[in-house]
Image (cartoon, rainbow over all chains, first blue to last red; front, top):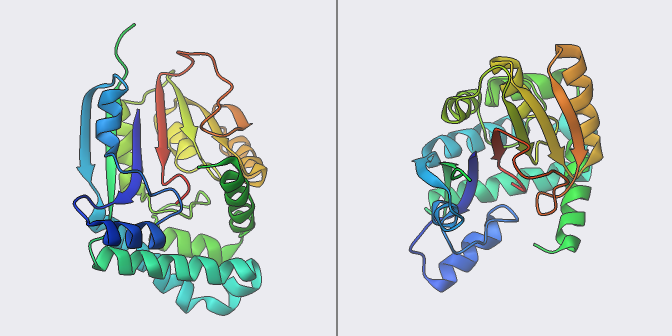
Length: 112
Length: 136
């Protein structure tokens, strides 16, 4: 199994953690690290790679493109445009404040 | 996440998957590096890294959870010639994925509407599983 996921950065105090959950993607609230959960589930050769830097680049790229193409995108998406725009802006803010991170996690299911 | 949250997510993502056309393709190419209906943060380079991690090759069976319109599962199947099943909850995305797989002659074994918390597959049905930016 290999996956990429966005999570709250580790080591945040309670208030900052709550802030990160608020501005992060809707399912970002897990308190345990994904690779810990993989190991606990029995996966072996569990590895991680930090993709936070690239995440910020991509979030900024989406935000820039949505801003530059607003009229056409607003026509196509309607109300969803505002939600996506704000969502990505919040994510950039979260990254600037080191509240969020993005990680590739991989592991192998143990042989039965 | 509650099933109520899943229903809300399904409604929200259904609206996003309605975005098509030249401007959407241009934007996706600039941001992701490919055009597969992606609206998350997984770039082509990262998808290629997933293929390498999973050691995907012809004949393997891949499951993509929360695939949206098929990214990156369909791309990985096209690149590596593996077989793929894609799953997600918004049916709109799965319809688009199926149409794309047909056009690209990708070995799509199924496009299944299901929550990742309750998958309708037997154990050991797949050689590899991938998911990216689910509910992000």
